[in-house]
Length: 455
Ligand SMILES: [Zn+2]
Image (cartoon, rainbow, N blue to C red; front, side, top):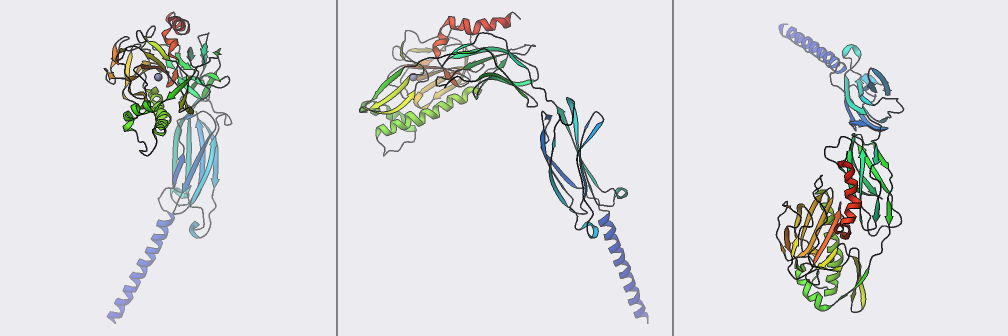
């Protein structure tokens, strides 16, 4: 009898525990406290126009009840997106547990004012928590509405630029602009803010490429923090220029002399000498061109140069800027390249002087250019000295106009001792002749800068 009563008690206790367990599980599951997951992309700092957002909401337990997107500006609340999900099946087992959507916010359509706006995304689930409202996830993100593009206008007036030459402009950009400059077609020449200018005056050196086709589009350009962009046209007259064509005869003797220098360059030993030469003249030349181009960012935001530029003393012009060089081998044309500097020849191992004040941004061996020095003169202007036999400066060293930086030579692809001298404007090679001409500097730069001094 006692035993049977004990078994009965045991069954009752187990049953009560089971019922409590089931009720507990039931309550725990319908009152679950896990918030829905929400992700929104992107989360921009600024709204400059209509912006598209992607939203993902999920709730693996009770499922999603409501997704709501709104923007709030100075107490004004605008509902942007709302979705209610029906309760389906036992405990919403057939309800929606994951939801993906896109929505857009257009400041113009929503009539938003310039300035702060808050994005709010609320997602509720079907838990019975919080008096039946469910668990809520809230994503809040502060943004700034800025749909007004920066203002930009030319200040200097006369802009006559030779094809292959340099142009210079003084312009004004509003204080909200974070980047500005001048576009020639799709090539950007960055502008530089005049130090201490409260009016937002900027200067920009630009160039018209020697091989430009037809009349290029030349426009000032500015961008603000929000990404708004402006362009402005200005008076710019481009003068056509003709460049020389030069025939170069490649002899076997020349190949035998220059090829050993290029042992560092991977060439196929099975190739003929002329084939090796063509690899150097085409591929290596191109690689070296990008090294020069990439130096464009290594520039001082302020002007370092002053006055007319120094030209190698007592030197004859051997080759000009943008000369079209036709290469002949055994009577047949084998290659064609454009010469991106001026070749100056004096006595062998002549002293090479810094053309103007600047800083050394390259001092090393550079492929077909041999031992090379590049000086930065600020605001995107740089000068190049190649085929040197000796370099007398170190990287980052500051140099004064006329200071010795090395000796002429014939390293690299050079037919004899000479200096290959080049000038670049934001990485684009330009005709150095203009920079040796004090009248050109006076008319095209000094006069425009004088306006700023009188301010
Ligand atoms: Zn040259």
